[in-house]
Image 1 (cartoon, rainbow, N blue to C red):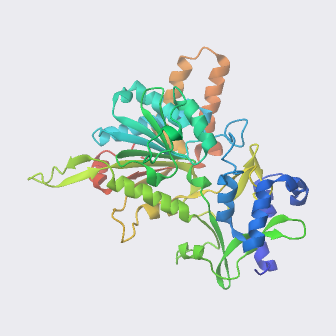
Image 2 (image 1 turned 90 degrees about the vertical axis):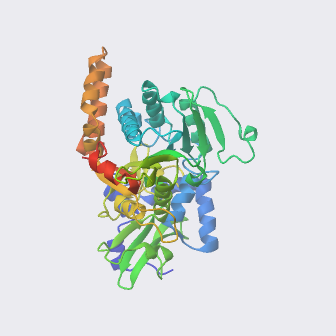
Image 3 (image 1 turned 60 degrees about the vertical axis):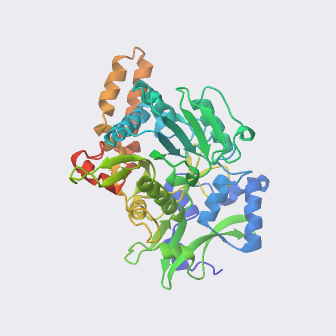
Length: 449
């Protein structure tokens, strides 16, 4: 691998420069890394680099976040005030309640097909799904033929989710049928089945309401820089002098550069092939799965039958293909150098929603699904306001006799909707099957216009 030229170093803006740009903490990597001698994950990464050479940022993220023995998400609760970051559902019940109303409205728009499942990708503590199920129960949805399917790779977080959502901790792996695609099963507080899956491809085929909140931001990214010779990938190497990690550039083009569009004007890119694959799997499911039939009223002989099979809602912080360098770490609610003490901090990057929309609307010729319809993105503030968060706040305040609780509700509302807080940082994207185009022209998705 070649070393950075001075020109590349000035333009790359990663490592400690990124760390300092995103936070006011100027602690040096050398100072922080003095405690790295006991970091088992760092030693594994060092051994891998020594054996095979520098690794991609994507491989580094995957190892840091989901390593079975030392991955960030694999063995501890990282959410809430005692964790490293707080998500919208953790801030207020209002967020999850309005998401539930949206899901019920769109399910009703499709004709209330049964059976159906609610799928959440990366459910965290289970707080969002808990709020959704509570609202569903108020609408007597628990009496419908539906199940909850959670895609979760962390055994530890799946336990937390089960405690949050279920009456008792149930079925052990050994008690499940041998041919089961899920690795855990229980019953929700409202009686619906809850099952855990390792991957979206393991989900059963039925009408599906997909929900992905702060899921795509944790999927691995590749970082690319355009130099005179073309695109080069940012890799992570080992500094032999002090056993710290550092960024270097690849000598030649790497496979990741194939994802760069010909008309790309940015000089620094973050791309996530795994996100594109995941959204295409979701899009294909939305097009293919289920069994609810809609007869085209414009066809007089009623022989033209469509299948409406699923809907997706993606919520995350991100951009529309205009940002460049967003890769960062979070620890104790503060920005943290991603290369320091791997496994002790969350690693994340802003979601490129333009890339997700492109992937959802461009099936490969060999695949048996059609382009989805996409709505959004819209800012979280606009979505929640259109869905009635202000009225919901007034309702909660009217029944609140505790001044502290009332102030907490107002503070939560501000945090969720203020453009300087989460209001503009988080975006909403909806996916629908193409056969719903006429329905959506007459009844557009709530929250998006």
